[in-house]
Length: 239
Image (cartoon, rainbow, N blue to C red):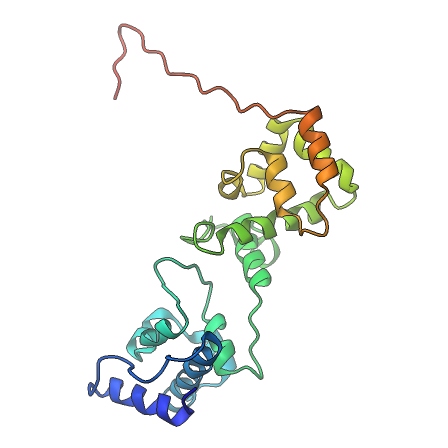
């Protein structure tokens, strides 16, 4: 791993137009690369912006990141903005300020859900909000869908036993689908063949019950609804 001074030297040359990309930095292991990215971000925030870690967390946005050419460090993280969802830059700032900033993937996921569902700090917000692009479709999308199903099950079905929960998601699939959709998880539901499959796979391995899953499949076999073709009368036209 390179020293902080070497990473910063390359970064300064890039800012001054003396180079177009990092050449020595980000050639180590993923863990080493993250530390090198942290060196550069800490320098930019403290020395160029004069901000504290807390001020950076609050005020940093994509325009500032681009203006300071910090987006050129994304390669060191394997981060592709157009393919990966982030709510803020905490996931990078944790490497710049490891002593004060911690990144929590689960908390970030639930925070986005609460914004969409109008819960928590958003319960009195009249503006409708949709999930950010790639939230359920990037490399972490399935994990987010599973985290959120566990979250709403704990919130609204927490008084049920595990057996009752398996029954809830299998006994009446249409009802279970509606319940999931009413809690803003229609997109991740589409990843699975049935509500039961979604629930079973969302559980941590230590909490899943193959016995209950197989029993519910046998007792309440899932039959996808038949898609009916649209009929047209002689007077109608198809757009």
